[in-house]
Amino acid sequence: QVQLVESGGGSVQAGGSLRLSCAASASGFSGYTAYWHRQAPGKQRELVATISTVGITKYADSVKGRFTISRDNAKNTVSLQMNSLKTEDTAAYYCNLKRGFTANYWGQGTQVTVSS
Image 1 (cartoon, helix red, strand yellow):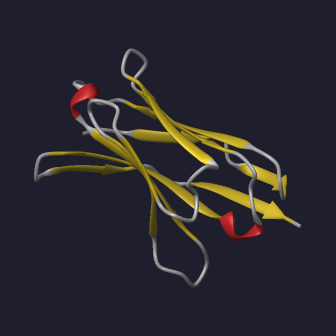
Image 2 (tube, helix red, strand yellow):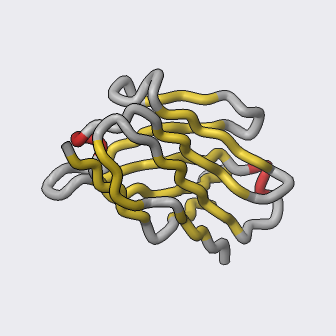
């Protein structure tokens, strides 16, 4: 069983920055595509950023130019650097790893609160 542990959430003022990290217990971590999702109260879960096994990244339009996803395969970690935070970025953020059709693992989530 793969375990994902997120850290780095917290409260910040608009315009500030936070860096989220996700540590994975998975062997063969480099073979997983990694995702960050978020869910705000009363809203559907939203895919924020993706990084492929070869480092190709994709972002939701709402965070392009502000967020950066990265991975360190030697340390089994995936990170999300969030800059120029807005109040609408307030949400619980979840790390997710997928490989093939059956391997799909989620972290417990970390809260990000951005105040004006």
